[in-house]
Image (cartoon, rainbow over all chains, first blue to last red; front, side):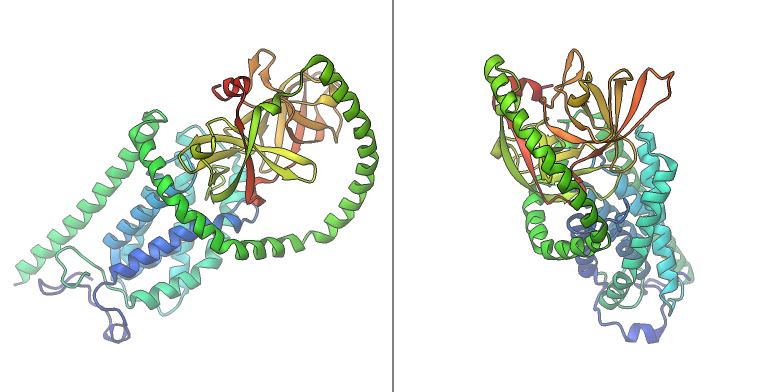
Length: 196
Length: 300
């Protein structure tokens, strides 16, 4: 589904869904707030929720939720910003890597904003799990490029699986809160009116 | 009208793609630039400045979520509480016997130190207590950020210890320092290695490195030295016989949990379990160098 004309500032969504929307404008303020809160929790709390060596990824479901509700561009920018903030505020030796992986996740998930919104929580949950998988694999590839290695069994058993499982457990509330705050899906595009 | 609409849609799509492509290029430029420049380059400077700005916010956030973290820690500790109790009872019995033996050894050691004036390397350091305000979000980096920095005398390569049931034990080393915060790489990080020795086996310095999560391997211990399970591993003060380490001699690191190797091996495979589990610590002690010798060690 594509935009229909110059006056159309947003993708066509079912009218029933839009009628329930409590948000005026595009709710980009809420998007920024959600991203900031997710980064803060990811940095200050999540490292302590540590099972095996897995740490839940709260940023991934946030980026996925924003992308599903506001489209490719907002999803990509949110992913870029959140990833960069996480790398700037935690003691890791990379810059730009997480920003890129979350950007890709945001841009990719944003494509689903143009489709009919699912009434079930399962599709966004599956997207979140895939997103968390992509982020972990992307980060691993960059680490291998840097010459840092980890045994495959350790990576899969101690890091990847626990991280994805914990992320999946934490995702439903994030997705529901995002839906509540941002309302019905509508892709925010350049030259769109009301994108504030 | 339709042409106008299609044109605008195409323009929007191009702008969207252009914006995303620009962001991708920015990411790649950041990544490449970050690894090409030295530790005091502009991007490292930006990261350091951002960390400095974020430190007070993280400090407040850490305090705010502390009760929840404590609750989580309590819940997760319940699962192995019974096993721990049984194990600790056994350890208490063993430690009572060891304590008497240690008291005698302490007296002998104090007399010997007074005679030759050695073994007082830790006296050249001033302990500074720091609170953990941030941790690595991934196991690729086993590190934490403390709320003490240059303002408290912390310098790069300052050893970091933590209180354990066995006393103060090595946790890691300061890898970067700012005005009000410092980053610590744990000894369980793959990039950290520690020159260590086993005093009870009278072994030469070996190199302690991370293997599987939470475990270390001490390499370079010749097989003729009588290494046994349960022996203590301490920092050697050297990475190799003639290469001084940034860690002074005598900081407890962990305990030998297994000794392997075949008869044809020249060296033993020594597995070590660290005394301190950095993942559970909320406070650590930075040993800031004060004496000229300690400062030389920190300079590497």
